[in-house]
Image (cartoon, rainbow, N blue to C red; front, side):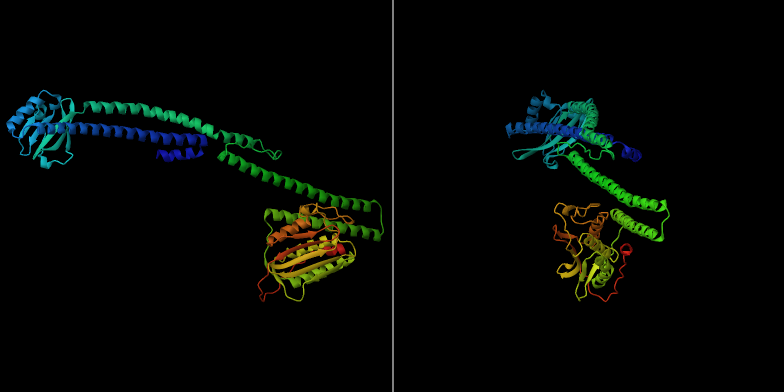
Length: 494
C-alpha cells in the first residue's frame, strides 16, 4: 500500500530523482541478495569442511582397523582403541560398533549423550548427520559406515560447532554493517551519475528556452559523443529547421499577400477620389466604374487564390475523385475561353478527337487547374500565337497538356515557377498583372489528383504544361456536372 501511495509522487518527480531512486532500489536489492548469497555460500563451505573433517576421522578408524591383526578378539580391539583414543582429542566424540552391534570403543562424552548408532547396513553410503547441544557446546556428529576386509563397522564421530558458529556470526555482523554502507555509497554515486548523465539534457533545455520566433535560425549544440543525446540534438535541430522554414514561409506569404492586396486597394481608393473631385458626365463615370469593376474582379481572384492556398496548407481542401467526361470538359473550356483568346489575338483550339475519354478527377478543381494553365498561356503568348488544349491516351492514363507559342520561360526561372508570388521576367510582355499564385495552386491541385505538372519550355519557343490522369473504368454513369469557376474572367472580358 505504501508503494501505491508513493507511485504518483514518483511519476511527478524529476527524472534525476527517479533515476537516483531506481538506481538506489536496484543496487540495494543487489547488495542484499549478494550479502545473503555470500552468507549462504560461507555456511555451505563451513558445513562441507566439517563434513569432510568428520569423514576423515571415520576413515582414520578404518585405517586403524586395517592395521590390526584380523585374528585379534573383540576385547583386544577394545583395549587397543582405548589406549589410542582415550588420550587423543579425536576421541572426544567417538564411538565404534561392529556389524553385530558390539561396542568396540565409546568416548566418555558419547556415553554421556548416548546418541543412537545404527548398524552399518542401515546407514547410507555418505552417512547420517545429526546435531545436539552438550553443555556450552553445539556438536555435529556423523554416523558413517566402513568396511574392513569382510567385516562392517559403524563409526560415529563428532565435532564442536562453536568456532564455525562464531565465524558465521562475525561474518553476518560484518555484512550487516557493510551492506548499508554500500547502499548509501551507491545512492550517492547514483545521484552523482544521474546528474552527470542528465547534464547535457539540462544544457539542451537551457539552450532551447533561449530560442523564440525572433531567432529561429539558432541551433542547439550537438555533442561529439555519438550517443542518444547527440541524436536528440540532431532531431531537435531538424525540427527547428522545419519550424524556421514554416515561419519564413508564413512571413513571406503574409508579406506578399499584404503587398498584393495593398496595390489594388490603393488603386481603387485613388480612382474613387479622382472621380469625386469634380462632376463628370455619364460616359466618364461609366469608364471609371468599368475600371473599378475590373480591379475588384482581380482582387477577388487574388483573395480566392489566397484562401484556397491557406485551406490547402491547413488540409481543409478536399479532392473528390470521380469519373469525368473529358469530352464534355473540353467542350466547356473551348466555349468559355474562345472569346478571351480571340480578343488577345490568339488561335485557340482543343484536340481530343471523337473517342470518349473518361478520367478520374475532381469536378470542382480540375476545371480550375485547366483555367490556370490557359490563363497563363494567354497572358504570356503574344498576339498572333496559338494555344492548344489536348488530351492523349497513353499506357499510364490520359495525358492532358496546354501548349502555347509564347515567350517561354528562362532556365533560371524554370525551377521557381511554382513558388508562391513568384513572377519571372518575360521579355516582350507588357501585361504584368497577376499575383504569382496560379501555378502554385495548380501544382497543389495536380498533386491531389496523384500526378504532377510537367513543364517543357525554352525562351522564344513557347511552353507546355502537362499532367496525366488515371483512366476511369467505363460505365454508364451520368456526366458529372462541372461548375464553371471563371465568372470573373467573363466579367473581365466584358
